[in-house]
Length: 331
Image 1 (cartoon, rainbow, N blue to C red):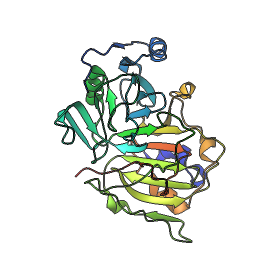
Image 2: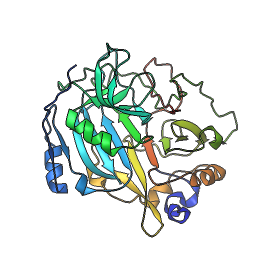
Image 3: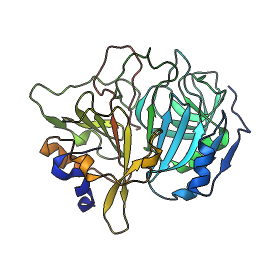
């Protein structure tokens, strides 16, 4: 497995409410048919084409600006659905989440025992993916509403500890105060005080804080930082040299190959559909530099399903007052 990582770590760096019972959806059997349907979805509609990529690690990407959610498997887009995210005053937080709990028959403990079918919890303070109303605009209290049938299919496809990325902002971007990507929490959703790197400290590595679980790596161009999370808990942080010449977000999956090697596959986020199923170019990796000791530590925790998010969002605390991502670990 480690041999397959050399293309990425070359020169010691890394790149990287009423639930709608009859929401319209359809299955597609080819990539061409799937792409055609996905580009013209109306509120409540979805398309699913699992045959396009039948096996591999799963990543869910929620685009708040377009009110769409995309499912990638092994780096390939296999499903797209319209969603309804949090309304004003209850905005859905953005960033990288771990699926903490799955409950097909969940009911809300906050909103009058309201049903939340096929719930997949993202934070312990109430944010989740689940079936719910889809009026064509943000209307929830922070959750991401999905069509009923799509929610059931997604529930059957994801695993505990899987990665969900929520990005963008519903409404006017110009008026949005800047917020960070990460705000770690413990298993009960209680915030953990940020521990910045000390002056002169190149990196911090504490794998004992989360001995096992899925690994996500967030690279921030804005802060020139790399943060490693395992099972939603930060286990490492380093200063890095990250080129700040691209404002788009990019995501990558690590996929195991039959010959024992591994490769990083691009997840084609909205606006970058042409990147689907591409293998990460080693040249891109050479543009990000980090401490050698940190790079060696990361290489020991990479596993199939590991996700890398390259973003312009901050991973440092801000004073904007905007709700930040909660990354929590299940018991």
